Amino acid sequence: MPRNRSNSFCCGGGGGGLWMDFEEEPKPSEERLREALEDTAAGSGVEKFVVACPMCMTMYEDGRKTGGFEDDIEIVDIAELIVEAVR
Image 1 (tube, rainbow, N blue to C red):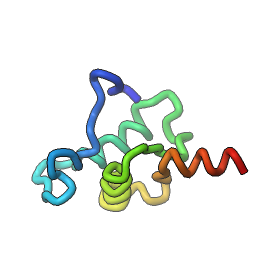
Image 2: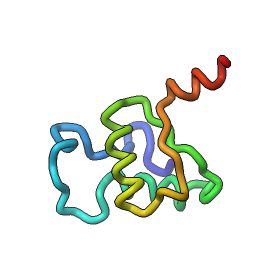
Image 3: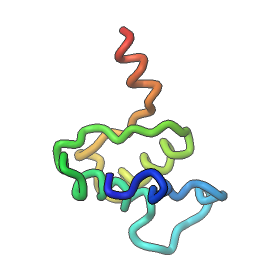
Image 4: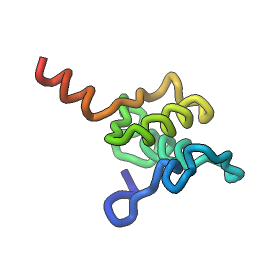
């Protein structure tokens, strides 16, 4: 991801954002998903967007729908990947 570590980009849900309507376009979650699909070396080869927070899961699932990324990427919690790996 182009923005990471100390220059990371939030899902938009922190500080009560989960319950707010954003006036800005695109929504932070939509922009982050766009970055994953367009601004990374893997580009359209990205299949999963991995989160480790229930709030991020909600925000990115919403951004996936409102941003038109439903056919492009799956939002998964890291715990799901761990369960899949140990089976």
